[in-house]
Length: 467
Ligand code: NAP
Image (cartoon, rainbow, N blue to C red):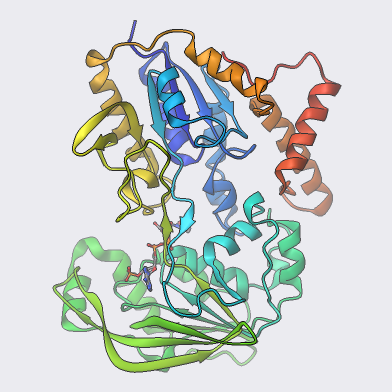
């Protein structure tokens, strides 16, 4: 018999599911409650992965299997920090694993960022993926020229969605409200701007190649410039840096590629850093950048500003410069890095481990890596839990049940597996009518109405229970 009977996992994205899998495999007695703020599981696999990348979403089949375990209770629509405090959770569970990711975006911190038609990529991605938080965002795609700031995979996704012929998206799970707006889009030119060079761009080469194959879209590097200095050459010579080499080959191959029937254009800019956004009548009219040069040792090169400014006239700006984690009351937090301080997943406060509290995923290491990166990351965190087992005293029994009961007493409708399956069935049925894999429900109220109706009509079915 282990000292751990009940674990809480906060967040149901990839890192949460991989932590659950590792815990279920290692501890045959454990029962896990997986708390999720939304009524739907899968985190960024549902609301971050681009709709035209269905293969990446197939990982949900793995998560579904984990969810089917009788020792895992999905408790959606329960927000830790609002509906339940972290302290209450720590009091009720032997172990708490934080896996709620990095939900906000970094800000450019420049003048004009607050102008109309200047948004973060996080908002745009959430909007086209039907995330309830972004359901009512408005994007003015009546503009012809857009600027996307940042050279990472999210910037690649949003640029592709902006330039892709809308017909290519019709049969994806893109949110209906976004498809409607994208169908009327007049965006013809996207400028994809990075503060460092082609060697330092963070696109994975696969995503970059995807940008090169958008129908009727010509792709160029601004001024045919693909700047590579001696330190960059040293970076490219490193055998572990194959991705950068492939990226640079892609950029060099762009020179002179002009297609006559291209109606859309993607322009890469290197070594330009956002300086300010100029507006007219409160709306973005121009993005002003400062040219930079690269300085430093290979792999440590920083973008150093020069005197030279450079402007792009545009009507839409999306800043895609990374995500940022959020603190919870009572949780140690590294505000400099936007993560929870930890050693291999064991949460630390002033260098000392915090009893029973662990972290995994983007909240542990920052917003880096692909979906699969989270598996090894969560296994590492669970290993710390297992290592700590001999030192653990079990929590007082019964507090977990009191905590779960307190939800319904306060009219908080926890969404269980059965409820989620009802949402899933409804979305798939909606999708079938529209020729899509699913038509996502995009408002929490409609999801809760649906599951409430579903239980009323099938009273013998069980809801989220303590297990
Ligand atoms: P990212 O890969 O970290 O890229 C952020 C970009 O923003 C970098 O080019 C960075 O430049 C730039 N940047 C940061 N601060 C800046 C500033 N103040 N001014 C100007 N530029 C700035 O972040 P991401 O694109 O948000 O992606 C997050 C993670 O999700 C990544 O690991 C990514 O691979 C993953 N992802 C994967 C996929 C996929 O596999 N299909 C899709 C989407 C996202 P510096 O390098 O100079 O800092």
